[in-house]
Amino acid sequence: MARDHKVRINDRKGIAKVAMSWWLVANRLGHSFNICTFVTEILAKRLRNKGALEIIYYRHEDLREKACVTFNPLTLHIVKQIWIDADLGKPYARRIVAHEIGHIVLHDSNAVAFSDDKTAQLNFIQDEESGEWQANIFADYFLVPDHVAVKLKVPDVIAGLCVVTDELAERRLREAKSEKEILMPTYEGDMCPDCSNFTLVRNGTVLVCDTCARPAEC
Image (tube, one colour):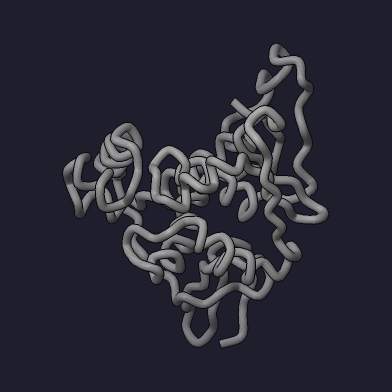
């Protein structure tokens, strides 16, 4: 597990909604979209409130984790081979990149790092304020939203069409089936001018962001 950070509390449902909003955008590239193209051609161009996204590649021996995100300036650090494998559509690498996308979308420089002492990490917070937990939840829902898992029904089919590992496909199908209410795409498809997420919903004649709760001009 990567070094964790304490971040603003966000629950599974809230993270799933944000992940689905970005999935809707990514899905315009195709059902099994190229996640590297999404990062460079879509995500990097739409993060107006976090600045330009830079990607720095490392050899495996140079980086403790396979990938990480830093802020000010916003930078994705990733092992070169992981990025190449993700670009080739290898499921394990796509999950790593999706996890880092979660950090980029959900977090910022206000995240507070825990001590390197493993015994001191995560002993006094709940999952909902763990940066790693949030990024994991985002990645899972971004790659396999509830409604997709339920529609495809079979783990092997989910894994093949969503380009994810068998383990992730089985987990997402199990989680989706256990949900009392399956999350469905309900957003307008436009970006919130404040938080940059694609979670605008219509409330009468105005659009309100489901993430930051701020109204936006129609």
